[in-house]
Length: 198
Image (cartoon, rainbow, N blue to C red; front, top):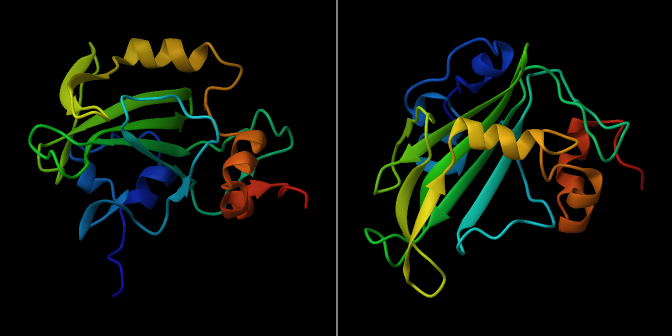
């Protein structure tokens, strides 16, 4: 089945364009499966992930058409303006105790003036997500690996800045070492310039 055209390209090509209030309008995910990526984003996984109450994390890199990641420094990639990185956290919840559903999707977007932080909070059914203000941290009730109720924290914009800007690279977990050790380097190779050796 042919995939519907995605508006994601328009957001990648115009990083000044405001993000939509609903995640479905961004075109990051397939219209027939809200948490499955559309054809444009490239999924990847770092080798050394932080633990998040047993939740599943799905990351993706989206680049403006015709651009690539400057990979001359394998530990500090440089990204073109318009780059969009996403990370979706999925958990079993009191509303969905037998199946993990998306709870939060974080976005890191490179604008003309630097990186911008955004997040969407999903509804209980995992069908739609709304753009959050991020003035303060928000919590969602989720189930941990043992099935106990815990609070998952969606960080404020300030907390996002503190975490990302304390690192040598704003983009955490996206380096040649992390990708090679997880097996994701090959799938991202065509987006890297120069491509990885070997």
